[in-house]
Image (cartoon, rainbow, N blue to C red):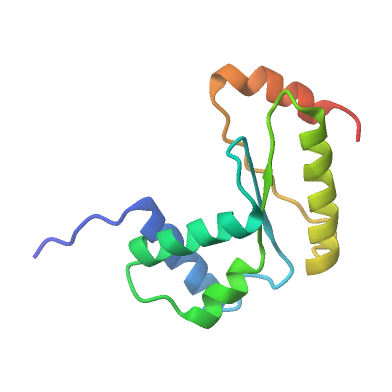
Length: 127
């Protein structure tokens, strides 16, 4: 019998859940989303929770999800708004202190080609 294809969201769910169970995922991490969509951290977490309940291939381990969700943050910003980068910088500092990330950072930048020049120029500014 052929198995149904696994969506990227289902695959991500499985990866982080297995990583956490095996102790591979450090306690000293956090995720900060940055986008132009007007949203708060709480709204972002709620959206993710709703999607996880919809796309998770198995039932959510509520304790594990709560642990993970507490490490997810969101900063609203526009590439043209220099104050958005200051808010992002402030959030990074707060998260590093809260979760003791020891300055370890991984940046994943998914930007439409139209905005890439503008976003790279803003990221390169001092501060």
